Image 1: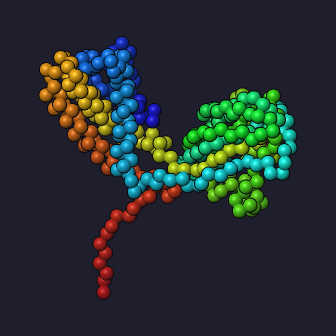
Image 2: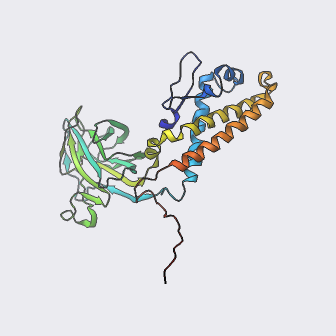
Image 3: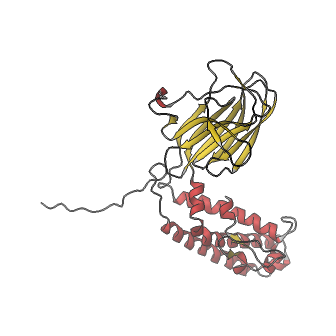
Length: 328
């Protein structure tokens, strides 16, 4: 998670590695100490060593944090995978036009921790070559990524993807300027009743075919078909956005976890015959223990301050047990 990796920085080298939380490793371990610890067989530079150990620290803090949160955070697929788009009525041409074609997905809930999990994107058309599928935030117009499908005329070609998008609206489109597709439509409304629950494909999501202008802004128009795109999607709880929102609470544990891993590396370097660390091994062991204890302490503080979101889909809040005395 990039938002956590950038919490801790490093000063003292040729260029400062910035810190979002204004916390720097050199407040615990000086830069010149790092130059004594490093083994060039392991890392090209002190900065490389720092960023690598910082990345390891993020993984470890996240793993322990999420373990401690078990019972409160619901890691689940809320809506099972379903296919959006079909051509069951035959192959009807969707002519090439200088615009984007595809669909827009929109959450029906205001709870922010549901993400779109796209597992497959497919295309069927009268076109043989690459089709670049583009993903946009439907509110900001920011492109979130892309994938390339190698299309074969007259055949449905699907591409396995594993993408999670935590946005309110998601656009999945392609540039149809010179690409002839076949019409794919959204007929799987909830309960097979498009008139009673318009545009909903399940209780959390609406899906509508669109065309949109190429370029900025993305002015979209609702239409009746998706230009050959077919998308396999599900909805799942996504705790990454929530964790990024409370990242400042994890800054101090992160700082001491990085310092702990640096000492662990220095001790390992000492055992390999690094004379610069051999003479200070007892001190390094003591500092390793100190930073580990500080990490444990600050992680407990962070856990005690976590406020569980009011989100009954992805979080559970257990009521505190109490003692009740009945009056006869």
